[in-house]
Amino acid sequence: MSKESLQEPTSSPAAPLEAKGSSVRPRLRLAMVGLIIIAAVGFLLIKGLGSSLDYFKTVSQAKSSQAQLGTTVFRLEGTVQPGTIAQSTLGATFTLTEGERSIHVVNQGSPPQLFKASMPVIAVGHFAADGSGVFESNQIMVKHSASYIAQHPKRVTAGDGSKH
Image 1 (cartoon, rainbow, N blue to C red):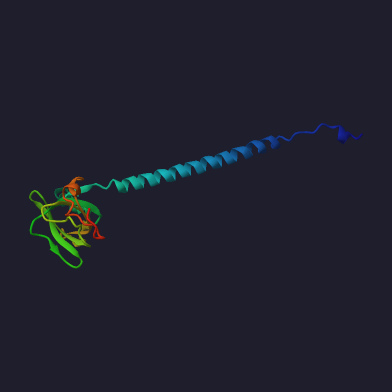
Image 2: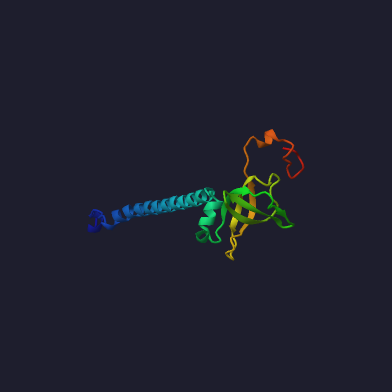
């Protein structure tokens, strides 16, 4: 027998470190991937909830903060002033009031079927860029109670002609 074959195998100090290090790296990668996924989900939740919690501003609030609002899109709540509704091929113009304050609204698109004077509505849009104080809207939402349709079934007609 030769001396080489009788010698005990020596363990290299690097071998256990490589095995230990190789198991730490996947754990570190997994932790990093997990943190990235958690951060992405958190970001999407915050953005999603932030846009869904889009409260409206009253006519008074919008008039008071018109300079800060600029042309950012928001919801404007007020009551349609009687005698101000003018229908056109592009939509309708009208005035929203709250107490003594009012804002002229130019809406692009068809107003809802229940839209009429003296009714509280929410208009979605922004102030005109020219600083005139005109509110440019692309959507009108009529505010009414959940029992309105039950109390007035002949007043509400769906787009397909069916009564609701």
